[in-house]
Structures are given as structure tokens and as C-alpha cells.
Image 1 (cartoon, rainbow, N blue to C red):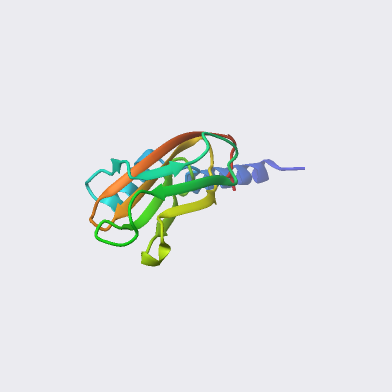
Image 2: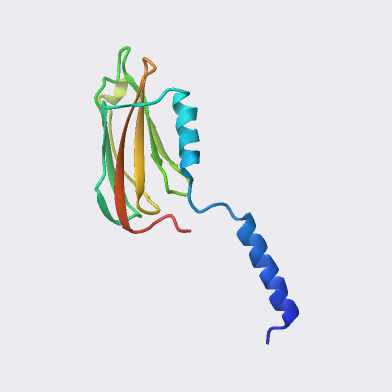
Length: 147
């Protein structure tokens, strides 16, 4: 049998845990802050990078993603890195890929976890200081990142 004192103690503990627990999802402001830390005050231009994700995802635990950058991996306008952000994931900075001359082509294929339906953004940083982006809004039917 649970006493009133025990119930009150559990209620206060649960309320404190809920108040101190981190947010389950990133906010758009957090994603914009991450983008600003990457590109500075400029804005990435659309083009030169292709983000390939399915528009309808059955299971967010393993979503196939391919990124292709239309730029060489050597020379003055070479690809230095590609960063991927998912706006509704608990940790929005999903991945970062760095390229060197031995890479051959600026193409990455992997799987990512997505918490829910959201917009995924890929940003390519080139050696000439330019930034290029692509984004896809997708629907996730079975969410991941819940733990």
C-alpha cells in the first residue's frame, strides 16, 4: 500500500525529472545556430550537392541516404566537407564527412536515424569558401531516436 507521503515524494521527484530533462527534439533555432557556426553570416546556396533520401520512410531506425557533390576532390574548388542536419532529431548534427584527394569522388552512402517526420539538410563546404546546400522534407511512419 502506498502512503500519501510516498505518493507526494514520487510526484515531486517526477516533476523535478521532467523539468530538468533535456528537450526530446532540437528546435529550428538550434539548427539555425549550427548552420551559422558552419557558414558564418552567409547563407548556403542551393545546388552542387544532391541529397538523396526516400520521401516516405517506413522505419526511422535505418534510413538510406546518399549525398553527391558536383565538385572535384582536388584543386581550388574541391570539396572539403559535407554536414548533415536533421531538424527534429534530439541531436540535430547527424553527420560530418571530410574529403581528401585520395577520396576520388565526393559521394557518400550511409544510413541515418530519424526521430520523426522532418526536414533533412545537407551542406557542402568547398575550399574556395563557398557553401552549397540541399534539403528534403520526408515523412517517417515509425519513429526512431526515442530512447
